Image (cartoon, rainbow, N blue to C red; front, side, top):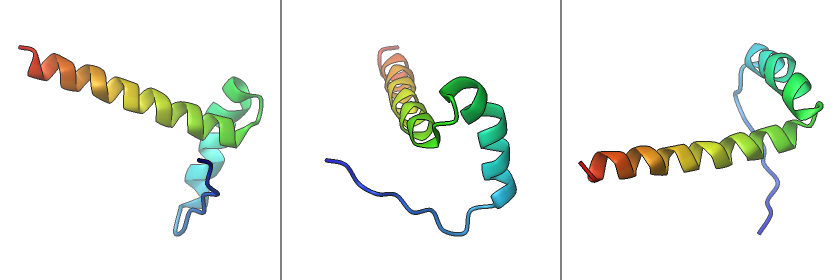
Length: 56
């Protein structure tokens, strides 16, 4: 399933900084791909942390 995403009340300076420091150098200017990739990595990292905590 694919959805369109709209962000409300988001600081424009935060978006500009994200695009300048992350999107352009690491994702060839593709904001959609940057957000999708970073969300996927965050979910994976959360699972790693969760598994580490619960397996101690």
